[in-house]
Image 1 (spheres, helix red, strand yellow):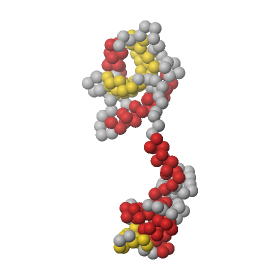
Image 2: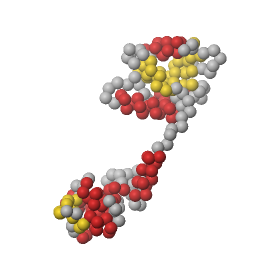
Image 3: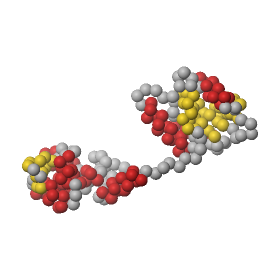
Image 4: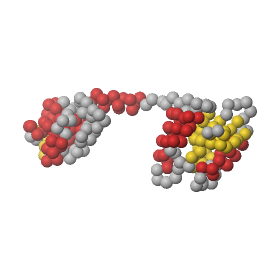
Length: 220
């Protein structure tokens, strides 16, 4: 299928199997279907997901409540992700989604209707933990000059600053003085390459750590 008009026959056949009378290119709509006295259904056709397709479909919601978009089913490495993301968008916009396979089989991914996503308590708690952990507002404007500053990076900077001033130290001492409860584990994981273990429980700053303190000097 290389043209939008090739999507029309399988979409029409599916709707007719459900008792609809179907006509193409009615006014500004690609497809309009009616079944008795029921409200009409509109389907907008495109070979692939585009922003203009969603704009068109949302505009049709000013005319009828039942609006679908229909696209050729995505293929390739990113197909599953593309379908999942656009399906979520359709649901949030109250749109239905149909995909047409290369063999002409139509798959109804979702029907139009109001959408109330379930909130993830775990994600909300994770967001709030990161908010509380982050000191100040180092990412004002969306990003810093060097990149995004996280609470984890700020903790690492505080540990590095303590070692830079006091030299090799026990993890417990760093945790207490730098006010980073997980300092020992943080330095052991050494995510940024800033720390090295000199002996059991004793950590020191690496040259990369010294550079990190200079690079992120305004971030903690």
